[in-house]
Structures are given as structure tokens and as C-alpha cells.
Image (cartoon, one colour):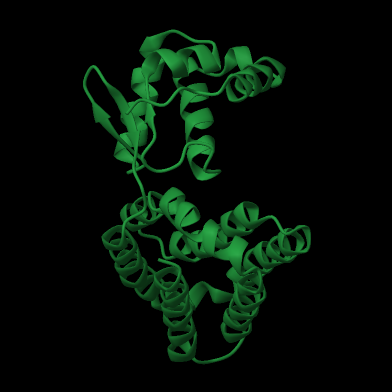
Length: 233
């Protein structure tokens, strides 16, 4: 079944693209990628929806060539599946994907938690800023922005571990994590309070003298996130 992009959605896309400062300097494929990714993460395009090159080209006001480039990137990110001559299917979040992402997170983050310990003092300030952002987004009840600040907190830890390959792999999971987490937080916003407490506890542990404690808190936080995600499926 093919779905049509709503006229209102297409009009919003055109207004945003035309009003954005310096938009003419941004490559067309980049504009399409940003627009479609945002629409998927915001669930304007839910799992199971089929998007066509022509519809997206009209929505963003570009030719089909940059749309193809953007869709290839989105497929690499695991957000869509391309079907030649048909379009791009927005992939639903499946239980196996949740398990795979959580397993990858635990492997990477638990390793990074140990590696960053000698540089922990430098991390405390930047991580505290991320938690302040999380508190602000909690106050505004903005689940998507909250999760993006949450991911930035963990990306800072992984990045500080000094392994560029692992950091790149971890960052590639960001969009999937945000899309998985938003529905649950919107249903149970109190999860944000628990998450903030977890992150503050990790920062406090960085100021202590036990790398074992810090690593255990990181793993426990991932386990808690796993229980939340699996509980809403």
C-alpha cells in the first residue's frame, strides 16, 4: 500500500527549507536527509509507511537525485528499506533491533567506562552540562530533546575513551535509540526523572575513587533502559 504525504506536511517542509538561514549553501541531499530523518524520529512517518522519491522531492523542493542519495544514507542508518521502483519503507522498531542495539551499547559503554577513568576529571563538567540540558527538557516535557541530551551524555563518555572506530559505531546507533525511547517516555514521563538521577549518580561516581562502581552504574543504567524498552513492546 502506498501512502501519500499530506499537503500540510509538504507545506511545512517547504516553509522550513525556504526560511532556514543559509539554506542555499546546504547540499540538497543533506536537506532531504535531515527532513526525512526528523519526520521519522518524530513519527510523522511511522513504521510501515512507504515514501516515494517524487513525493519527497516535492516536499523539500529538490530534484529526485538528492532524494536518492538521502534515502541511501537513511537505509544505512537502519531507518528505511529501499525497494527499487517503489520507494522507501519506513522500518518499524522490532524486538530484535532493540536487543541488538542494547547489546551493542553495553559492550561499547562498559569498555569505555573503564578506559575514561584516568581522564574522568575532565569529563565531569561536560557531563554535568548534558544533565542540566536533560533537566530543562524534562521541565518542558520534550521527550525527543531529552533523549538527544541523554545520548550526548553517553557519546561524550565513549568519545573520551579515545577509540575513534568505537565512537563512530556508537554514534551510528543514536537515531535508533531516540526512536525507540520516545514512545515509552511520552507514555511514562516519570522515566525522565529516574534517568536524570541515574546520570547524576554516574557523575558523582566519577568524582570518587572506584572505577568498578562507575562501570557498574553505567551497566545498571543500560539494564534499566532495556527493561523500559522491552516493557512497552
